[in-house]
Image (cartoon, rainbow, N blue to C red; front, side, top):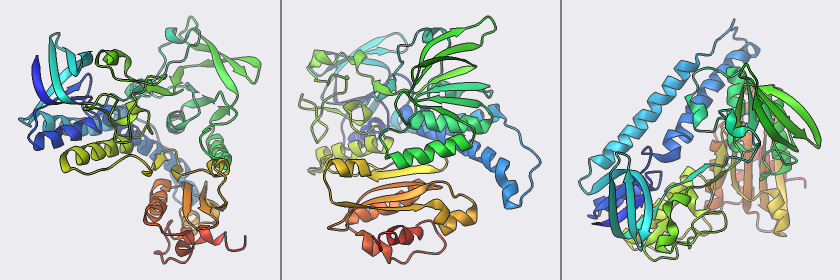
Amino acid sequence: MKQYDVIIIGAGQAGSPLARKMAKAGKKVAIIEKRLVGGTCVNDGCTPTKTWVASARAAYLAGRCNNLGVQVDGYSIDMAQIKKRKDDIVMHSRSGNQKSLEDDPNIDLLFGEASFSGHKVVVVNLNDGASAEITAEMIFINVGLQTVIPDIEGLNSIDYLTSTSILELETVPQHILVIGGNYIGLEFGQMFRRFGSQITLLERGPRIMSHEDEDVSHEVHNFLEEEGIAVFSNTEATKFEKDAHGRIQATLNISGRTEQMEVSHVLVAAGRKPQTKALNLQASGIEVDDKGFIKVDNKLQTNIPGIYALGDVNGGPAFTHIAYNDFTVVWRNLLMNEDLTTEDRPVPYCMFTDPQLGRVGITEEEAKKQGINYRVAALKMKSVARAVEVGEVRGLMKAIVNADTKEILGVAILAEEGGEIMSVLQMAMQGGITYDRIRYCVFAHPTYSESLNNLFMTLDDK
């Protein structure tokens, strides 16, 4: 058994930088990765999908620029080139990340699958067929999530797509049936609609984006349908089968009635679950909840002192930037003797549909449930000068404010560069800047951020 100071399981957005910080502090580190350095973000998530979003937006603009007085006779989609560009960008990021780990003399990068065999003892079944048993006083788990595959009759017989496998397509599918009406399904649905696919999107609940306010969900629903995406709520797929020609026959339950639909591909985007089953956590006494998420305290430590869980696997918000923040909390506490916690940290996020949805803080529904005396500032993008000038008038700006203190409690910006506009308000929230000060703030004209004057102006007469 080999002794290390630190073992890190998973080379994702928390694991890799933590390995480098620990190594720089003079600790001997083993970092275990069963697949690809960089984790979901670099290989299957943020980096590759946003390169495809950029290609899809270029196609969208080519198709509508006649409205701006720029005549384009036609355009075509080269899916192989789109994939190659994505692969090149991913490889550049992954290889740089991997090289930094391999070049550090205090880091051993082990490719294989890890599982606990005892208290702070980890067995690594290496990808080359060998195995290793290692131990350390400090262990960090950063294994992330995987796609939930629903129990639908015939699904395993049709070569369904996930958010990972869809990124390997080199041709544009004829008709994709998307199972799931949340962020992943919506991003891929709009993206492939712009590439030329017919898209049918299924949501089992009464509306898409059930975690957002109804008016925000309604706006997104509208612009997806405007682009030709068929959105079905209160709908489930109950059966799949392939015919003799390889076409997929889907049986759908739409608000209680049964319908048949022929599609070429099925994308499963119905949620994600923690990758903890193979870790054999019970061998080290690490506690998980009923969904398999590792239980941690507000300093990300498990019930076993010296063992931590970072990122999606601990059941917190499943965003890359939260995983990275977990890393910063842990290393600063352990190496800088700080006393940081995850309590009350902001949780901003952005859905990269077009327009984007930038979100931070509480929703209107949450404000109601908490009994807060709140007010709502709302402004349609068609009333924003910058949006009109560039021809991007879909969406809205919305802010929830405390009626008594004038604090900004939550923001939803559904707009071109909605994430950037949201970030301006996030900074205000963190700095304690109240909405009345933003109402009269001087912004450069004409920018999207300038319209925050107008957003909070809507509260003047209420």
